[in-house]
Image 1 (cartoon, rainbow, N blue to C red):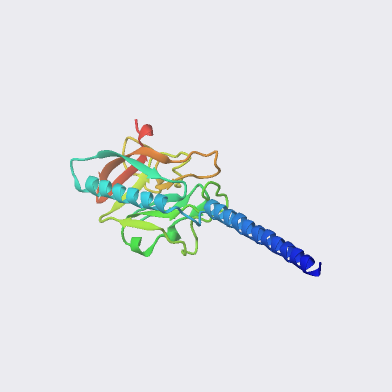
Image 2 (image 1 turned 30 degrees about the vertical axis):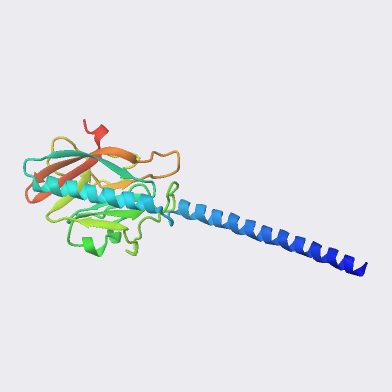
Length: 230
């Protein structure tokens, strides 16, 4: 009987150990899922496919802009441009008379301008830290420590502007006032994959227009949603 009792106790101990092990494994799975979701919502974790797609679209956009700048006969182009929620496209001009700011989070972007763009115009992709809900203003750092994920530089005195303001184009009003009869108001180029909560509009995949205007030594490149360029 003592031997049988010992075997029963041993079996019970093994069963208890297995239950505890399963509980630990389940807890690890739950914690891992919560960490993943938190990172996705905070923008700290970016999908490889989304990142590669965004970089490829930046390359394609830069190629189109270079072709537009170099072709004296070409003034307008359209193209399909994709920008997932986790990213922000920022245009830095060869020089600006006032700090570039985003109206989405009221952050000043100028100090986050990377060294590679200090003396050249460029387009940069930044991480959208808020992802689908950004009210905290973490996308750009006033101390200049926020670095873009990818940039493309250009030659010449190029100024990137957008004539429109909508839920995705969130650049502040520009000090540049080109003498161009088509539009009256111009904003700095700051395009969000999404600005604000999930009820806001995602950029997704849209057709954009690129329009060139030369004024003295400056070449203005206007970028906007093609459906609004009538």
